[in-house]
Image (cartoon, rainbow, N blue to C red; front, side):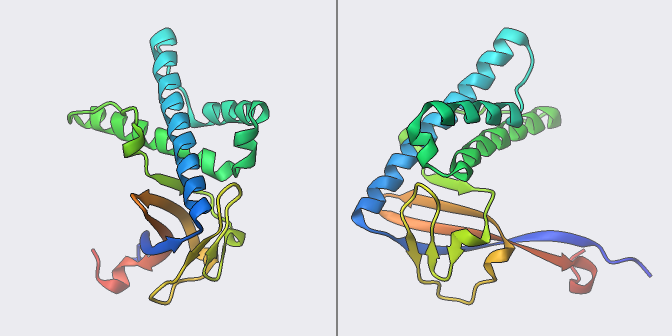
Amino acid sequence: MDTPQLTTIHKTYQERGYCSRAGYARIREVLRACRWLYNRALEQRRDIYRACGKGMTLYTQMKGLTRLRKEQQFWRDIGITVSRGVLVGVDRAFKAFFRRVKAGEKPGYPRFKPLSRYQCIELSEVTAGMVKGNRIKVKGLPAIRIWPNRELPASSQLKALRIGMHGRILTVDRDVNAAKNIQERGWE
């Protein structure tokens, strides 16, 4: 008898979010700042590689983020999870680039983002205190109300949270870990 394989399946629930008019303006302001941070992190990795021939790690950039937060009040006012999410996105883009290089595919170096292409605040470190009932509250962002149209899993199962601004529509994506037994389900 084969032992069952466990795998992690991520389910994403997407809801429309609502906040005040000033809240939408604040989200746009944070998106502009996150885009700036993304482009600076990408530029930093590129310049370090050109100068030294060595790459830069996510954790080295997070140390630089600590210095940035000490120097600028704006970044202290925003939750650390927001700015770390930006650096995780840069790291993910480079990992995908090197994976494609290794596979012999067309690599496509990570691009600098114009404001029109940076539309999502990603929180990869979600705590249960951020989501309470139908409200999402993250330091530095306005309170976001959602009205889910289905039963959602408990907040303790959240893996990631993405807040997207597409024109005037605010969306909230919740990624939930749902470990499944592949053999029992017949997904082989």
